Every structure is written in structure tokens, then in C-alpha cells.
Length: 296
Image (cartoon, rainbow, N blue to C red):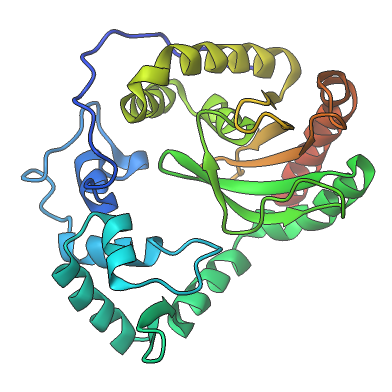
């Protein structure tokens, strides 16, 4: 399987930003939407179509994770980096249009019906998810492990579907896992065209410059594994007790790659089991999904 390693480059690393005060809206405005990026990043002044108020409102919605049923204004402010008065106005507006709901008793916000509807609509429209589900369940039962379908979300991978055995390590739907240290993220980077891969790796370096030498080494190994085997490993890199393997899937319509992976306890899914059994089965699963998508 072809996976041409992107050429390494020397460029000045940007000054590290404090994650607590850098909003997703500010990041998005600096970076621009990934598929449309030219060779350099556009400055806010150049990106006149970017609506900062809208992006900040979406930041507030992104503050909620799968385990966050209720959040206060202060918690949303801390997670987004936005000032509390700004969050208060945004939350009020989002509540008026149904994307948030407010509890007087708790003095907290939760995602509203409009957000739930939007999320389920997006999931329902993912044809790859519909095709892959029965195959993912079958692999999960065979490996007695978790099998995930994930998409890229900036510097993370977002799990959009999952099956797990009762004894398996569980990453639930809606969870985000790091791109740099997981097999899901490494497989995604491997599937990118060289210019996009180079850009993504630059973002990973800027996020954690102190970790970059080790991250770069692991990514280079992932490129070799993908070229030789067709899949990527995560052997205790994200969590010491968890091993994983993943395969990217580039949809026939040319949209951004998705990734299917399998993870479980390290004592159960050793490197040889992943290499000789689970990895090849996962590769066949992705091939079957691709064949079905092409027929449709």
C-alpha cells in the first residue's frame, strides 16, 4: 500500500499558545478550513468571510463532551477561553433557538434538542457508518475488544461509532482522543496527501513542541508500518495499558479520510496479535466497506 512519507522541513515554530486562553474560533480563524488552505495560513484580516461571532457560538457548543450533561457559565468560559459576559450572551442566544437548555434549579446549561437533532442528522447521513456497523460488531466479537469509527477534529480524533465486548476497554461515541499518540490519529495522518500531511504535522508540533521529537519518531514509524502492512499501531502510547491498531478509509467521493480502529487491554491485544490477526482482519473490513460504497 502506497504511503509516500512527506518530506521533513525546517520552519520556525510559532510561539506556544496557552490552551486555556486560545479559543477554537481563534484557532479556526488563524488556520482556516483544512481542505481549502493554500500554501500559507490566512490572517484574520485576509479571511473576510469568517464570522467570528458564529464561530464563538459554536465554540460554546463544542465545550460539551460526552460526559458533560450540565455546565455552568464559568465552566464554558474556561473551556472556550471566552470572557464570561460573552459566554452569557452566547448561551442565552443558543438557549432561545434550542441549541442549549437552561435549568433554573441547577443554574447550568445542557445541550438542547436542536443540537441533538443536528448531531443525529450528521450521523445518519454518514453512509460509511451505516455500511461499517455490522462488520465492526463482528470484529469486536472476534477480538473481544472495542472497534471504533473516527473522524478528524482539528488535532484530535472524534469517535462517531463504537462497538465493544463486555470486557473491552471502552471509548464511547462522542469521545475525542489525541491524534498524535493514538493509532486512530496516526492512520488518519498516513492517509492524507503529502501537502495536507505536512500541514497537519506542523499543527501537531505547534500544539506540543516539547513532545515533538518523540511524536515525529512515532509518526515516521507509522508511515513505515502503513506502507508495509496497511495499518498503524498504538502500543501503550496514549494509555499504557491499552494497545490498538487502525486503518484509514478514504471514501470514494474524495472526502476527508475516516479511520476504523480496534483497541483493548495490552495483555489481551499484544503486538503480535495485532500484527497477525486483528490488523489483517481490520484491513479486510475496510476493503469490504470500500467495495460496498463503490457499488452504491
